[in-house]
Length: 302
Image 1 (cartoon, rainbow, N blue to C red):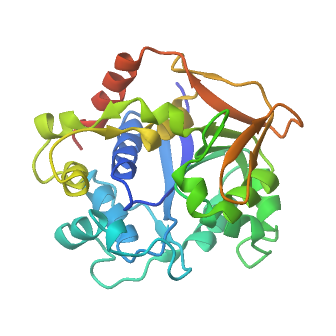
Image 2: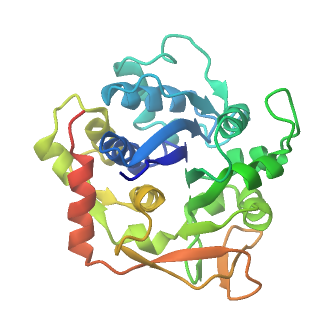
């Protein structure tokens, strides 16, 4: 029997609806016994992010999953980033819509990692990397005598990042917080797999949500509120989650090991050496087959 992959998801749920779909796919994989969701952290200052995550977790019958959020003020917090996370939070049961304050993301990350066996955790980051920078910069505390970098080096087997564009280019997650993207790319002590802009951009998913799931499904509603219509969306974050749980599995090939350099404006560039343990995904499966595979997971009922 295959052991489920221990996953922590770090998401900016709100600016784009594919985060909601990525969370739905993670739940589908967990129900199949392929993933164990240790916790979920939200990486913007939006007051609706943690509630949106908890509402989706509750829809999938997982109200027990701990949720943390960024405590920095003013980062990607505005009406343009609340198209769906606010209405989901306000219209679906969740503990944070009821006045409870979510946990600090960096503190939660330290606690979750400290409790797991060495080398056992995969972190999937599908937003700007501010929470992960805070984790790396964290100091020993009552939760763990290790620094953040030491804790990551001991507990994390791989970081999966939806970010950058390869072999070079500009991508939103890196652009929104270039200092954090640079810091994580330079300082993260374990292997990193990057799922670049070009991977998810060509894979369109979500339309079957409107054909095969109930009207009250918060992920379906997220797509409708974000798009302003029924339809599909690029699958940037979905592909990162799928790789984080299943690995290459014939869906992708991995680039040779090398180094992702992030410039001051957030533009990424692939460098063949030095080898920093970085790789990026390259699609190998037929595009339509990947779309079907992702949507089959996306429309599964709780």
